[in-house]
Amino acid sequence: MSLKIYNTLSRKLEEFTPLNPPNVGLYTCGPTVYMYAHIGNLRTYIFEDILKRVLLANNYKVDHVMNITDVGHLTSDADTGEDKLEKEATKENKNAWEIAAFYTAAFQKDLEELNIIPPDIWCKATDHINEQIELVKRLESKGFTYRADDGIYFDTSKLSDYGKLAGLDIEGLKAGIRVEMVAGKKNPTDFALWKFSPVGVKRQMEWDSPWGKGFPGWHIECAAMSMKYLGETFDIHCGGIDHIPVHHTNEIAEAEAATGKPFVRYWLHGEFLELKEGRMGKSEGNAILISTLKEKGFDPLSYRYLVLNTHYRKKIEFDLDSLAAAQTSLNNLKSTIANIQLMADLLTYYPNYRALLKDAANNFEANYGAIVRAFDEACNTDLNMPQALANLNIFLNKYQEKLDFENANEILNVLTKMDAILGLKLLPKVHELIPANLISLLNSRQAKRTEKNWVESDNLRGEIESLGFLVKDTPRGQILEIKGENKNV
Ligand SMILES: [Zn+2]
Image (cartoon, rainbow, N blue to C red; front, top):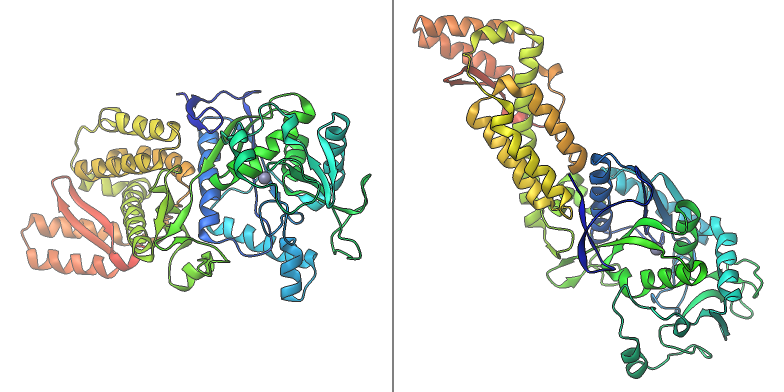
């Protein structure tokens, strides 16, 4: 089956073919570690995790690199304002390195809570200062740079297709926007490659360079580190849609000007999550964190489930009511699957139970084949997770309608594969919950029912229930389910 993804560069759905199959180079822009990530930020990482899991399900070997921005990201996304880390360090009365270490660990914990597979390589901007200086030197030797008052800048007018990712109207920008603040900056879209430490100021993070003491611009770290680990041309680069007009546009400019080669083959961008009142953020004072959700009694995976219910290229308007609904749906999904697991375990570990059940011809392929393929198709069509989840529900409903315990093990195999993509930890461990005398109680109850001794049969039902299991009398025999309070297994 072929994988199709929407490429921001072509604005089209394209068939994905890697440069060096079965390897896929994947670079995802990481956090600027000066504060906790809020759930809006984390939505992007969930989308990227789904992309990675779908690639893995398609038998690709994914080389995943994520950066940690611990220097150079200024309070405006352009090249003005203070360094976000140094500013926060002053506020928290720590140094910039401590701030970076603290919020990096917090971010990694968030990923773990959301069951996001960590990248193969984490790379910090401050560990790659030489690579960034080398890249700026390369650009300088090709004539793409100039010196302004506060740093070395990239001259965007020298690159004929600058702004292609965002479809930027360069002429319009020239006419419409004043070339701001920085003395010596030539074009509105020009950006800093290396910023000088301000005269008379000792920064906590600064390095020597051929142009003077200072620190790298924000975009150069991603261009330098992605090419170091994945090559000068690689397969996929992702981030939030806010990265399209500036950060990713400038990464492309830096890389392609330096190498003369296409930088990235597929660009994927995730939409925002917002609140009713608009954008979520620290400066807006409305940031919701994973820890906030946990304090309110939510499982972080219910947030993941909520995110998967909207296509990654559509906006989500978040509120706690829809999160509560997501948590309920996720719990229902898990308890349905726990009941399939229970039947599979009963039949595996207690073969005598099979004798209590009536046979039926339930063919796996005839009943489920088309639904399983529809699930894969949805995942492989630009990561259509809402459709994939709908197919998962159809799949489970079919099981319940058929009481199809003969196929329980095969169904669980399929669910394991589906959950390898969804990452919702859907499959519980049930076997340990089954008490030793459960089957003998079912046997006795069957005998009482044959004798039409309904009083004794009901007593036995009560006894089984007290062990945490519900008995359902069905045309196929006594089917067991896990009782409500026993559900979160
Ligand atoms: Zn980046």
